[in-house]
Length: 112
Image: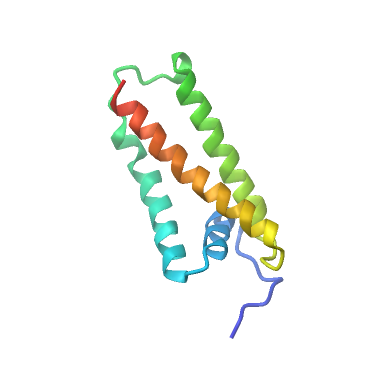
């Protein structure tokens, strides 16, 4: 049984729905959704810098806007059909970018 194409989740679940649709193996999609939620929950706890304000950190600002832009594009791609290969490729690139920015951001924070 398949879900009809016209049924999509609410707007705040669309990025996670896009992650689930673009990864071919469903267990991998569920693990990716779990990883994205865990990385969002752990983000305040991996901040070890003495300066907590983003005013003086250019790399922090760039990473913030990259993560936000990636999240918005994933939200845009959530209701799109997976019939077109370019939507799937763009979605997988955005998922890679989303996780790469979180990992790079935490690495930069811990060693600065």
